[in-house]
Amino acid sequence: MKQFIVLLISGLIFMIFTGELPAAESQTESSPLVFVPKSRYEFPLVVDGQEIAHIFTVQNKGKSPLIIERVKTD
Image (cartoon, rainbow, N blue to C red; front, side, top):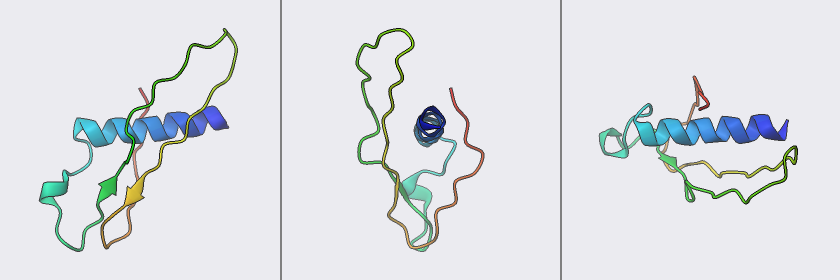
């Protein structure tokens, strides 16, 4: 389950930075606005088979609800 969450969040961050989501400049005042305080995380070296996870924070700084659809993982 943790791996799924990590992949889901990683996919979301990938979409944000590859242009799959609208850029902040094109947003209206009432639109949702995606904000990711720390968009990168360097995973440490791990032993084969060891499970690791990291949680990325995704915030909505806009005035409308942020709806996340069509998440893709890399």
